[in-house]
Length: 417
Image (cartoon, rainbow, N blue to C red; front, side):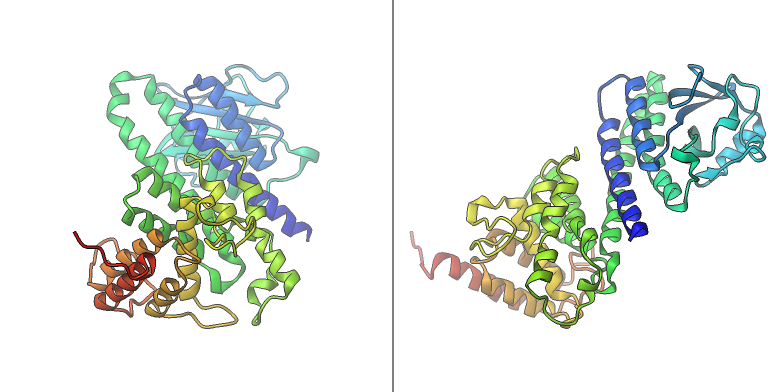
C-alpha cells in the first residue's frame, strides 16, 4: 500500500508540475521570477531540497544559473565553464543521470565558482538536439536517493523547462525571436498534448480492457465539438478534458475494473466517486482551457437528472460536459468489458439515439452521427473512429437514425411555409 500511495503521489505531483509549467511558460513576468517558479515546480515533483537551473551559452561554452534554491552559500550567478568534451557528453546524455564524486568530471569542470560535487542528479535541457541548459538537483530529505520514478518525472518536466529556457535565450536576440516564435508555440502545444496523452495512458493502466479509453474519449469529444462548429480553442480544450475525464479512477481499487459481474451498491459508490476525486485533483490547476474541471466532475450527468454526482438536469449541465458524456458512452459501449462484449458501432448509435434526448444532448448526438457518417462513406483522412473500431453501419442507415432523432425532437411536427 505504501508503494501504491507513493506512486499515486508522484503521479499527482508530476501532473500538477506540468500544469503549472504550462502557465509559467506563457506568463508575462520577468524571466528571473519565472525561473524561480519553474525550479520550484521541478523540486516539488522530484521531492528535492536543493536545485539549480542553468542556461548554456556557447561563446564561450559555459553554464550559468538563472535560479537556485536550498544550497548554502551558493554564488549568484553560479558559473561552470565547459570544455568541448563536457558539451559533447551533456548533448549525448538522453535522460536525467545520477552523478557522484567519481563521475561528475565527465560532464562538468571544477573551474567555476561552484563545486559540482554539490549535485546528485543532472538533466541536460535540449531543444531540437541543441543544448540550452541544465537542471542540477542536490540533496533530498534524509539524504534519500533519487529513484527511477523520480527520474522519469524529471525527464517529463525537462521538456517544458527546456522550452522556457530556450525562449528566454532567444528573446535576448531580437533578430532571432521573430522567426522562432511560431516554432516554439507549436512545440509548447505539442509537448502539452504529449504530456496529457501520457497521463491518459496512466489513468487507464489499471486494466487491459480500458486501456486507450481516455485517449479515445478525448479524440471523440474533439471530433464532436468540431462537427458542432465550436472554436478551435474549445475543440483543443475538449480533447484535453477527455484525456483527463477519468483521472479520479487512479484512486479506485483495481479489482473493480476486472469484476465480471455487476458492482454492488458500495462498489458502485466507490466507482462513481471518481468524478469527485478527479475534480479535487484538477480544480486547482491553471489549465489553458478553464473548463477541464467541470468536465471531469460532470461527464456522468444525464439530461433527465439520472446521472451523478450532482444529479444535474438539462441546461444545468454545461455543453462541454454533455459532449464528453456522449463521447465517453460511445467508447464504453463499443469497448469490451469483463462483464460483456463490446457492441458494434451501428448498435451503439441506435441505442444512443433511442435514449436521447432523455439522457444525452441531441446536438452532441447529431454531431456524433455526422462524424461517423464521414467514416462510413469511406473518408480516408482524419478518421473519426479509432483504428480498432470497425464501422459496421452504412451512410443510409445513419441518415435513418438522424431522421429518427429529429422526429423525436420535433415530436413529428411538419412545418410548411
